[in-house]
Amino acid sequence: MFNFISQDSAAGAVSFAQAGVPGMDVTILMRVLDEIDYGVMLVDANGAMRYANQLALREMLGGGPLRLSGGRVHATTSADQHTLAAAIADALRGRRRLFTADCVNGALPVAVVPMHGGDDDALALLVLGRRSAADTLTVDFYARSNGLTSAEATVLKRICVGLKPKDVAREQGVAISTVRSHICSIRTKTQTGSIRELLNRVAVLPPITPVLKAMSAEHHEAPATAQ
Image 1 (cartoon, rainbow, N blue to C red):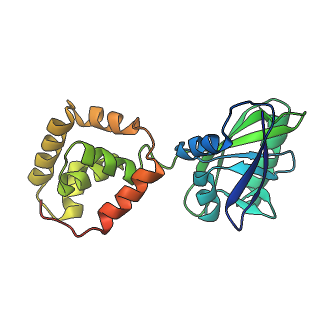
Image 2 (cartoon, rainbow, N blue to C red):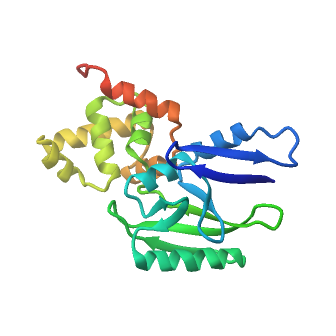
Image 3 (cartoon, one colour):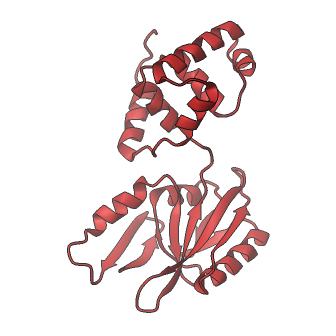
């Protein structure tokens, strides 16, 4: 087992102590958790944070449904704080809970799962829901992997957030026939038989790693080239 020691929120650093797992690399475990496309954190009975991956930290620092204050995890609203405290108490008794917490960036589901930390240290695992089926970086990577043009990638992103072709055409200031032509090209390049199949494929894409996020940032900062 691992004992997850408290985090220094100001420095953004997480320290771990390893106990009883020969050959286990804690640094690798931390990197694995940072690759997960969900914010995850461990808290004790008092809500003190023992660990948080990078996505959870960004949510807490960026107006998400949970925030870190005095080393403890709190909900943004008083009503959600009551629900969070009750859910953590339930988790320490072995019960799982799921609730929706409000925040400035919109409501987000929070799963609270029982977790044993070793040496009778009862912990609760908080898992934050995803804000969308596939984020922009994931769609960018998928578009580049399939050779989509910038215009086709833009259409794909707008379809992925629920816009209909006519809405995309109106938003982009182009004829609907142009959008339909882009969709046809996208389906050909991705070998999908319908928009629904295309969206289902995007929805189950693996998370984008920090390296690929950096690549995406460099891609967007580079001078645009004509398609």
